[in-house]
Length: 454
Image (cartoon, rainbow, N blue to C red):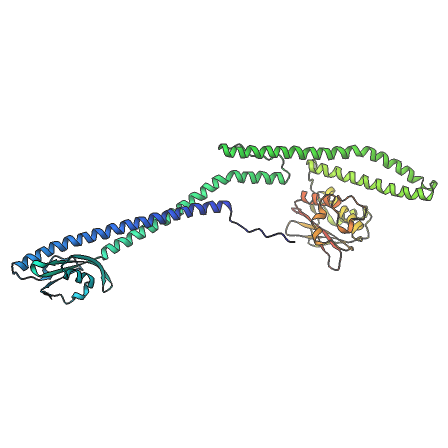
């Protein structure tokens, strides 16, 4: 049953920045809406009050002229530019302006004024906004209407709206930048924790966090350092224990090996059944001796007591010599012509890698059939060993490089389970890695990369 896929989420810094920006957006929009509503109400009310004041003043002048039987022309009134006025006397327009008929005024306003009331109403005429004021003058048996343009007020509201939106946008940008700076400052200790944890994971057990000025963050740093101290102490204790055990086993193993070799030298004096038992003892003692040697080597690597000593070597001369030394002189060796004559490698570690790969192929892969070296990039080489075995299952390809791990093909064979782990450790010391893949035609291909060899 496959594990459920984890849903990817935004980084914490991004989420903090978005939170600040979203908060600023909501606050700015709220402030913009409130400010616009207040400004709109104020400007419109002010405009309407001005219109009423001027209309009443003009209506008073008109009424006086009518009651004194003086000639009256609405165009003589002091109306605003773009505005217009109409007078109805005895139900008929007086000196009407042909550009603005009575139908220009809203019917509702005209009805209210005709019935003896006063009124005010906003309307549009020919696509332009106006506010109209109507006044009934019963003494003069007349009605006076005047319209005032609202385009100036509308322009002011648009300018206010633009300014508010620009201010809101600027506020959002500032808030987002402030959120980014704040999140960066808050996450800086976590970044230091991640850096220190990464150093510890790669072997730098001495990595620690510096003290923080903030009490809460200083508590985090102290807790992390205490945990790192505990981890370092435990790992060092375990590494020291493994090293001590391996060293302590060397003496009895050496004595046991010497005794077994003496018995093996006189095997002709022993009965057949005893010889069979002796063969089992000899093989197991040698296996035990190889395991102890591998454990000692791993303990030195874990303790950091082994350094990388690069020197210039000729792979065309070194690889055949190593193969011959370990009894694989008849294996095909193929070195690509792009590989330079001299490469910079730790010769002892390289020999250990190649020897372990050859022994692994011989024990578990049906025997090595080809050793090759190719260039990988400009300054890296790859060493490979092909075998004639059944190959390695995909689910085991990473696990077989762990300590004491065995693939399905090696579970019933003799071995320490540490050879490939040593290969991976020495490859990592060269800045490379070890892996296994299928060989064309069947079998497995074990490969190791070495970086910065040129």
